[in-house]
Length: 221
Image (cartoon, rainbow, N blue to C red; front, side):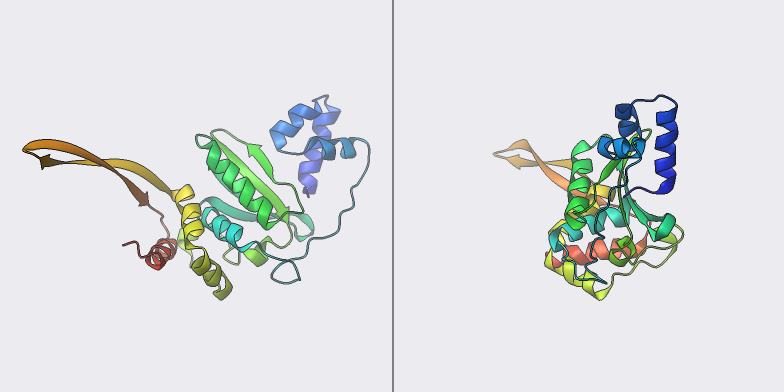
């Protein structure tokens, strides 16, 4: 589902002679949708059932994975008719992480397309749905580090079930892996040892606490 502003931008570009392929790449809109708009067709699809306020089924492992990048680099923005856009900002230097974000969103909300919107140096992974606020009650005005971020009880349950995936999502957004090294004497000669070190940083003390809590579940000091 696309908001009306995006549709108007696409129609204006078509009227100006821009190709469907170019518009699709620039705005992250499928060419099928562009052809329908060009030909005056409107696709009718049944509304998605929300796992929280409806009878829909939530892919809990994928949601645990998606919760991490949402807390790190995600936001919700409200559009017309109470449709919300979930946006995850991903650095173009890490295409595999972009693919992981797309896969996680598609698993949580499989009935709508996931879009890749290119910008300077990064790609926004975008999905439209009225019920994104149901799945991310942490949504609110202002940066996350300037307000309280607390998980609902049902979110805590999912994170406790899949702490590895939750941590993977967090570290994909605000973590890194480096190679540390040290030397030890072996048979009187110094020998170099290398080992990976994972680092996580976030300006929100609440998100830092959620990361530490998930690490505690896995007995990682």
